[in-house]
Amino acid sequence: MEDRDIQVKEKKEVDAQGELTREGPFFVPNVDIFEDDDNIVLIADMPGVGKDNIDIRIEDGHLRILGKVSKEAPGDYVLSEYSIGDYHSNFVLSTIIDQTGVQASMKNGVLRIVLPKSDKSKPRKIAIKSN
Amino acid sequence: MAIIRLKQPAYPGSCIAGGSSGKNVNVFENEMNRLLHKFFGNDLTTAHSNAFPPVNIYQDKANIYLTAELPGMETSEVTIDIEQDSIQIRGERKIENEGENLCYHRREREGGTFSRKLTFRSKIDTNKVSAGLKDGILKVTMPKAQERQPKKIIIKSE
Image (cartoon, rainbow over all chains, first blue to last red; front, side, top):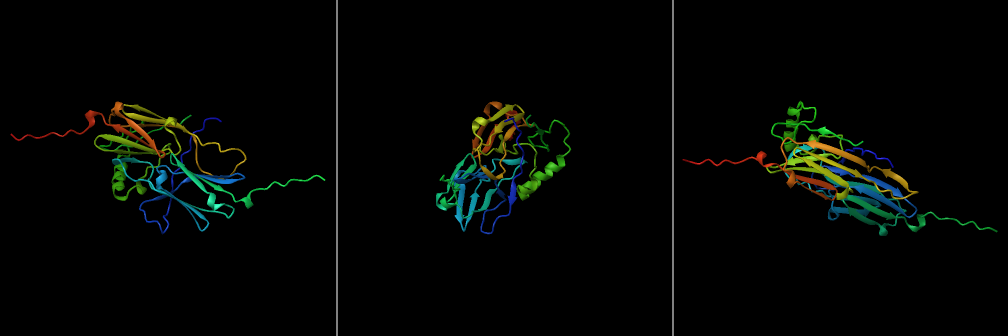
């Protein structure tokens, strides 16, 4: 693949939901979501969020991600090109997911969640019998 | 080609010098922004830049600090070049190929090469610069060269 310049994306700010009590702006992480035969995979960029500062919940058919970011500044602001705030994201899970088998990992500020599909929703190959 | 951008607004007393164009037309605006920032925090005053990565710069008496969001990047993938009065950050963010025959529902994460240079008004002690990458946040600490640090003069009573 040829070298490609990275595209600049501004962070998307959202309104905090009622139950959240933390101060400051909330951001929606940039995500990739893809599926293969067995899993649906969600990858989210959440720079500044360590693995101990992330809360992932599955409730009422929703996958909720909340990542806390330290807002400590090392000194006085001179230039601010990006805002700092917690990440919040909400996805509706379809019933085809085996909610007990969900796995999540966090590395270098990137969250990866693997949502296995339940057996009944996996594609089945139908063998054709020859007579 | 990578993005190279010499930016920076200047205002009196800041450690950041004007860009290559030289003219500091936005002195007033920048100073206002800085004051607004003190009152209202981030939201109103974020200077959206079209260069990657967006950076935040802070300073205290001894150091200039630069932070940037580089999620998913390893230390080996980022190169920092320091000169007495400038810093250049280069690298390539790779989005892994997850395999064939995948059905993508969303694809928002971006990959590609980047290069960015910022110029400072104050001199940096290049030997003592340190940088770290944690949880996808790059933080560079640049001590100001001695002569730029404020010096306290003790007044003796006679």
